[in-house]
Length: 172
Image (tube, rainbow, N blue to C red; front, side, top):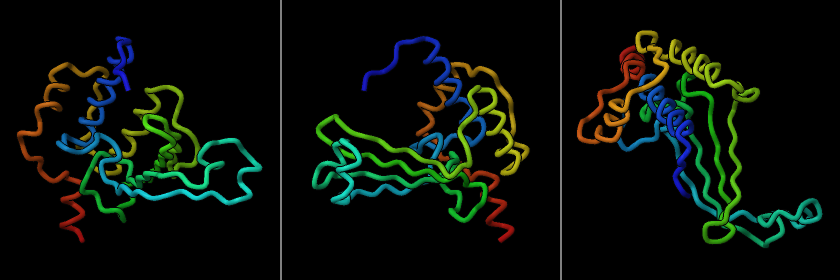
């Protein structure tokens, strides 16, 4: 997939990554969101009756290879699955139709859709952060290239346990 060249899109992407770094901290080798997850592979075999409902290739074929990933929403790779702050849960399924040809289905365990405005989205993230660990809450509208460089060079250092996880360990 080619990288974007639109400067506004690149700036928004850097801002999003910077916000995730602010909220969850740096965790080299893990995704900035949905850091904890399980990847599965298998084969999807549709019902024989399903082909009468659609022409979608993964339904009209006898079977299709799939990859699925279940995840917790946060950027905290060590958050326990039974921690309510790990919500919402995610599920992504990729139907592999041919080389570089696929159909994706992505779901969340939220009641509704993400807010249309990115600031509303960050407000909801900040509310979630307050529930996890109020002292980590920092508002920054734009992140410098220094924050992005820290992300790309952070694999050299080891991250401490996130305070919310430390609290869970000591209070359990």
